[in-house]
Length: 399
Ligand SMILES: Cc1cc2nc3c(=O)[nH]c(=O)nc-3n(C[C@H](O)[C@H](O)[C@H](O)COP(=O)(O)OP(=O)(O)OC[C@H]3O[C@@H](n4cnc5c(N)ncnc54)[C@H](O)[C@@H]3O)c2cc1C
Image (cartoon, rainbow, N blue to C red; front, side, top):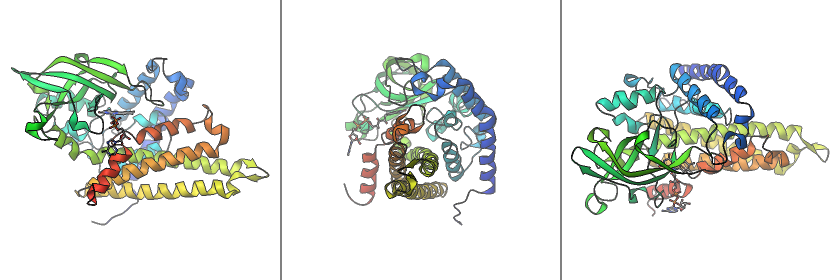
């Protein structure tokens, strides 16, 4: 297979159409929300709850994107997607992220949308959960993390026990994105003890509808308030038909899909890094200190040059990863390298962007602190820096 790092003609058309979509469907909604959206302080109530108008706008953007055929275009055609390649999906995610933080973040399916795990939907699950999710009519949540386990997820304490034709779930999940707003969550629970099933065996994924679980505390991450919360499962009963995939096999299945999550998150990091770099270049040329543009000082130009170089390398790693995934190759090491490097680059660039802009970098009227918060957060979610580097070390015969 010839490797070509330029977007194909078809991908270019998709990117152009995405630009049109953003102009027509996203920008007007952002303008309408005004400060409620632009200013993170005004977007959330003191308890973290997201402003209803913002939630509505997110909902509308998602549905409009699905109607236009973008939202879950990487999903199989037979369920309503468009089967676009990982390379095209990468280009599209990065392209939208180049617009910086905003409603554009919700044009393509994120953590609230369909993932390969949901493709294991069977029988009535296809019509009830998978297809509506691909059409942007329903949203979901992926509930793995618990108060006592995050990185060490197989050590989960949540259990599900069979009682006749039902499963009874008990436990607490936390930091679950979209838990307050989703229609259903994909909840991981231990169904066979670790001693019997092994560390990664004995875990099953259940579809639990929003009205079937209670919300616990909000987990308000600084910079992303209102989106994560605890899911309380106290004797929650779900029928056998809500097992997603095979009993006891969910963790192995989920591990098989890790690369896509890391590709998507890394693509966002690469795109937003580009957005920040453009702003840094412009400011470094315009802003004068001691009679010269600050970009003429080597300490400033080197920051831009280093981050540009890192961003270039991260993008190359992302494109290669996407191509390897399309080619059906094993990408355990590559996806960890990419996720770690792309988010670390985003973080360093966001931190330098604040520095280059001086006090303006700290101002809530400018986008820098908001991107810095997101960049910091991306180094924790979807596997922390340390977990990614552990994987790379393991793949190289260490640990
Ligand atoms: C905004 C946000 C959204 C999230 N969304 C979701 C979601 O939708 N669904 C979900 O299930 N979870 C979600 N999470 C949880 C996230 O996946 C976990 O926070 C993450 O996996 C880390 O777990 P932890 O916070 O418990 O940290 P811990 O696992 O307790 O780790 C603490 C520190 O120890 C380090 N560490 C742990 N083990 C090792 C090791 N073996 N070697 C070296 N260092 C190690 C970690 O890297 C970290 O620095 C979200 C978190 C945030 C902040």
